[in-house]
Length: 439
Ligand SMILES: [Zn+2]
Image (tube, rainbow, N blue to C red; front, side, top):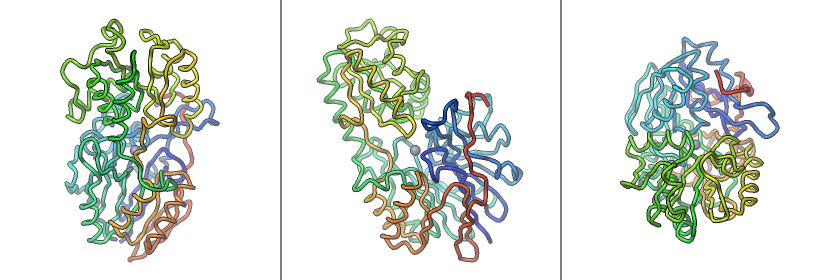
């Protein structure tokens, strides 16, 4: 029996995470993400994985398995599904975020909700999700029971001991899987260079409370629309300070609706009001939760910072909290927004001047704890720039994982007859640029 893991993206850049799993000639995919263009990619709106190795064998493709609902894991789905519309598995929130994204392109996806811990059999693929804490609810690692042993993908994870939803990374289950013997672990490398532990998401809530209660005017909080727990903490901070709030931004409105429907976001009765009503209320009794934390030119915060938003005109009485740090490629855009906010006299808090953001990815000591829990036979670092992959590999070797391989986009890991080898640059994995957002 032969099991092959092919890397279509995410090993060499932060974004477009996408891998293929081949069991004796049948294919499945893990995630199907996009990347936002780097600053030197002029005229490019999106960067996709190269799907050639999938489309050349489209009849072999069984299904797509999603670890969580971030754009860099689900954002390229529509560009694949237009050519090959196969069943997609994910947890409830992941599935609904994916549905919203794909249906925007006029495609009807075959989405299937899977409970955490439930084993799914699809063709030769047998897999289960295990909860992990990350910067989006309902995130999961995925374990494949293959003829060559268990292949475990960590998903994007950290070891937040006090996550907002009370669902930490389930180390007990990872230990149980580890005891059965993990042949190959694929693990998140994003924060491998960062020593120590990432602080808990709850620590951000404390700071949001402080800022909100000291602000004498309106408070605008910008964060990722998919970061439901951050949105929840912004709501809690506003409500406990006697404020009512409005959402601004298409994805914020859409995602909060989905999250409320699924019971992962709670909005106290009467706290949410329409923006038009909010702007006529006393400023010190209001807050706005907005998109645009990445400086996207047409997102609400950018428009507000440029004085171009149709109903929100910012003044020196306002406080803006950018509850995020820029992802690579967005630094200049975010900086422009911050500069413009200061020009308007706004008080600005952001992830680099106070504690209004924590990362969703495991730092070095968390990776060590995870490796000690799983004790895999082999490790291939995934999800990161090359420097992150190399650093994560070094951590794996320090933890005495017997086999550690640094792979890049285009490489294929082959498990055969109990042995592991890497075929370098075996599948096309270059950047596919999209100009405009049509498909
Ligand atoms: Zn993620």
